[in-house]
Image (cartoon, rainbow, N blue to C red; front, side):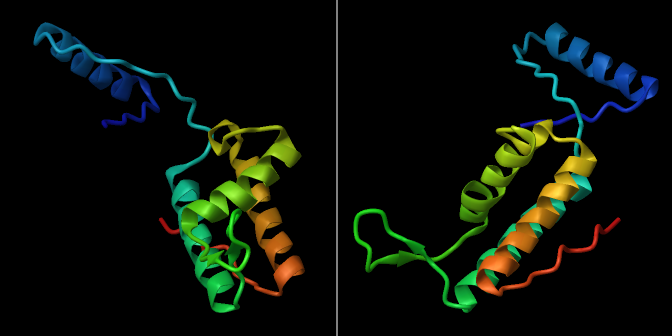
Amino acid sequence: MERWLVKDKKQAEFFIRFIMQEAEEGRERYYTIVHANRTNKQNNTLAVLCRRLAEALNEAGFEIPHPFKPDLEIPYTETSIRELIYKPIIKAMFDADSSTTLTTSEFSEAMTTMVDAVCRNTGVNVPIPALEP
């Protein structure tokens, strides 16, 4: 998968040249327009935060009960944190099904809410990683 971030006229012209070259060479492509609401730094921060939350919850003895066999518990993962904790938060706060539709401030607010909720309900406190350049 290729991704292009177009922030200015020069980058747009470069992308247009790429598209034209692909067409001239007979390559069929689907192009999708996605609004860049959140930054790559925020996306990376969420991934790190979800991994750290999963590790901390597992270390503290919290696991996910298996739906068919209650005595079998499943360790948390980055994906389960996103699906079971983060996505319900963004749905409740912003009526959003995906964080890609959130503004950068909504995205940050949702991460803070998630950390606070986990700490309040489990005593597990994982700080939001600093946004690294």
